[in-house]
Length: 308
Image (cartoon, rainbow, N blue to C red; front, side, top):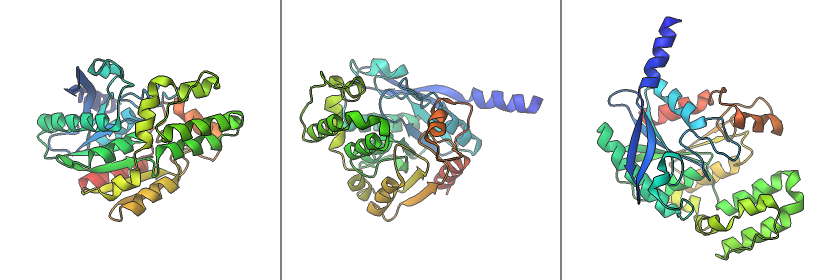
């Protein structure tokens, strides 16, 4: 028991703050060191106000990024997990976190790569993008200086507007608002803003006026095209029990980049946890359970890829 406590304390001790320059103030993150000379992965968060631990005030408290970082440290891989501009410790980086583009996030990613290389002495840094973060990683790696490769986890293999369409259609409870949602998506794809005044409250949040410019920019991005033009190694990992992004997305990314490695994990869901069945309620319950570890095959797959 004592040895376990000592090991746990040692692991906690190597999680230290780290910063990178942002537009108006510092970007903040946590460096989970696995030892001198260890490969380093930058974990790029998913959509909305997702923080460095992978939590989100819109219903995710499963801490998937923190748990992934700790598990990877146990495999000899260091990580930096970050608060994106305008979120958590990076609030001071910009006056308005909603006024952002994918190119802005890519710039922040390169600033992180520079800061991490300076701190660790590593020649390059791996980019792990989860969900929307996959798109950011692919965009950032179009300029590959200092980037070892890209790891896409639960990343879209088509335009994000199409992913949102499928997410909305897959939930029967959304039937009353589907027509309104589809019309809004069509308008945003054309670069046109939408009036949310008479929309259902859930759609008012999804298409809030302050995020529409970002949605318009994001919907213009083409993940397979970005994957096809990569000059660095690409690992694509997708859980088969993910109710937000499908295996078809992962396969589309892999088809665009024949040199990519594709790994499907049968029981992993969108928050990187194991789900024992196809029951939707049980799946979504894991979004609020930080006591569940991340899928061990995910950890093993990532560690093997960056240490090969």
